Length: 206
Image 1: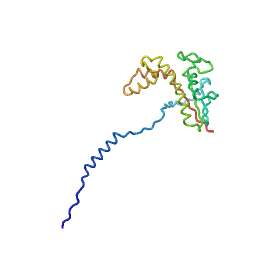
Image 2: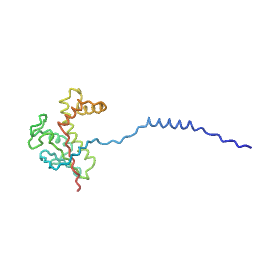
Image 3: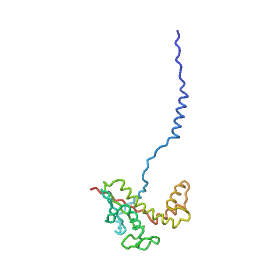
Image 4: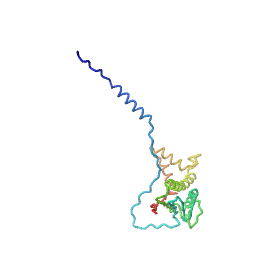
């Protein structure tokens, strides 16, 4: 008696179905992205044998210890008061060269925004959350002053916008594939008025 051949299963359609399912999952699946903190690091300065002398009054020293306690200019300070203290330092205009500064023009404080440097130092045992909170307040001080001048100079181009500086940055990002030289020039002008000079010293190890 002749043996009958076993019937073959046509797997061609299975491959098509698997391919369609793969496409379906690729199209519909949301891929989570890791979110970080956007920080622009200062450019590496070329080596210079000349010692740079910085007047003590142009330094705003912020210390954060292992117990998350804040010390600003040798005095204890709550984090809620840090932003305003930094604004007053950056906007002081002590030497009279800054005609847009609205500070007290105290000769014992910073000369002008270009010379004013904020120095932040933390302990290796400082909590990450507190470190970020302090850094955010310092950056917010720069953003406040930049927004004030952006609103004064270019507010008419952004009617109804409360934060003109961030509106300008958002417009720049929106037009990233289409260069807007005029907008870029305005943003650079604002940045030059209050340059971000936030120095982070090496953490202390106690």
